[in-house]
Image (cartoon, rainbow, N blue to C red):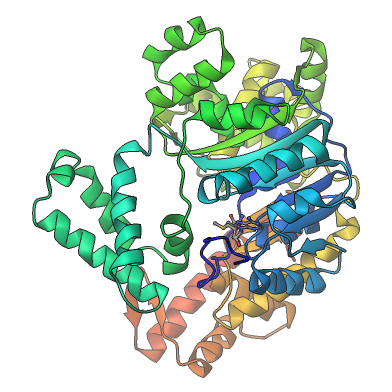
Length: 508
Ligand SMILES: C[S@@+](CC[C@H](N)C(=O)[O-])C[C@H]1O[C@@H](n2cnc3c(N)ncnc32)[C@H](O)[C@@H]1O
C-alpha cells in the first residue's frame, strides 16, 4: 500500500510550526554561533508537509524557492489549494520519501525540514530521508528534524503500546471508533489497578489528557504502524550517515544553558568531550519527550568577531503588549525569572522604535540601555523570542515584495475561519512566519476589509446563519443581547490591542 502502514484513514490536523521557518532556523544557528550556508534565497524542502499550512505560510513570508512532498493525496490537494490562493509558485509533490530520494530532478537544498515525521515512519523511510539529505542537502545546509526522544518517553511507551494494540487487534469500526474504544479499554485497565500503571501513576493523567485531544492528531501521533521514540544518540548516528552534525535546537530557549539545563548538570555536561554523548546525557537531566533539532552538513563555529557583527544586524519586532512585560518564561526544566531591571528598559526601548522593531546594534546605541552589553541584549531578545513576546524579523531579500502572497493566502484562511473551518494562524510577512490570530479576530479583519459599519454585528449575523452560539470562557451564550455585548467587547479589545500590530506585521 502507498501509505506503508502510516495512518491514512484520517487526515492530519492543520497546524503551523514556527521551527520550520527559515527565519527561525537561521536565528537558532546564530544563537549557537554556527556558521551555515543557507542563502538569502534558499532552496527549501519540507518532507511530509501534512495539510501544507506551514509550507505555504513559510513560502509566502520568506524569499526562496519552496518544495514539499507528502504521500497522502487528499492532503496534497489541500496544500495545492492553499498554494493556488497564495499565488507564489510552490512545488508540491505526492512522492513518498523513498520515491523522492530516487528523483534526479531536484536542486541542492539549503534547508530540508521535517516536523512530526522521524518517529512515526519505518526504518526504511528514515533511511530514505538520510539518503536524500546525503544527496540533496548542500554542504553547509541545515536539516530540521523533530522526534520523540527517550528517556523522556520511556515510561509512556507501554501506554501507547496498549492503546495502539487494542485499536488494531480488538476494537471494531472505523479508526475513530477504534481509537475511542482503545482509550476506554486502557482506562478500565488502569481503573482495575494494573501494576504497571500503579508504579507509573503519572500515566493516568497522561491518558486523561490524551482523551481530550483531537482524534485526527491522536491517529497520527499514537496509532501508526510505526512509532519509534529513540535516544538522541541513535538519531545523531543515523543522520551522521548523511554527514550531518547536531548544531542547535530549533526551540530557541534550549540553546541557552543557563535557563534550560539544571545547575547540577552543568559540571557533568561540561566534562563530556563527545558532543553526542553530551546531548544524550542532557536529555536524562531535562527528561523532555520531544526534540526539535537542527543538524548542519559540515557546521563550523563562527569567528567571534563575525558572530558579533552578525548579531548586531539581527532585527527583532515587539509582538507582545509593552505594558505587560513577562516576569517569567516557561522552559524545559520549569520556569525562569526574568530580571525586571533588565527586561523592562529593553522592552521600553524596543517599543519606542519605529514599528516596534530594532536591530541589536540599534538597541546598543540607546542611552537608557548603556549598562547592557551586546551579549546581554542578544540574550534578552532570544529569551523574549522563546516567550513569544518578540519575534525575529524576516531576512527576506524579497519579503514576497509587498506582502501580496501573504495577504492572498490570509484571505483564503480567513474565509475558512468565517466558515468555521479555519486555523488560528495567519501569515505575517514581516516575521517570515505565522502569527496567532483566532477565528473571531480573523472575522473582524474580514469585516474591516469589507468596510462593514458594525463588524461585531456582522460577525453575530454569520454565527446566526450557521446556527452557532458564542462561547466565552467555557460558557455558551444563549441570549442575543449578551452575544452582542460580548462580541462588541471582543471587537473593541481587538481594535485597541491587536489590529495595529497585525497591520505592522503585514498580515492585512
Ligand atoms: C504527523 S504528520 C505531520 C505533518 C506536518 N509535518 C505537520 O507537522 O503538521 C506526518 C505526515 O507525513 C506523511 N508521511 C508519512 N510517511 C511518509 C512517507 N514515507 N512519504 C511521504 N509522506 C509521508 C503523512 O502523510 C503525514 O501527512
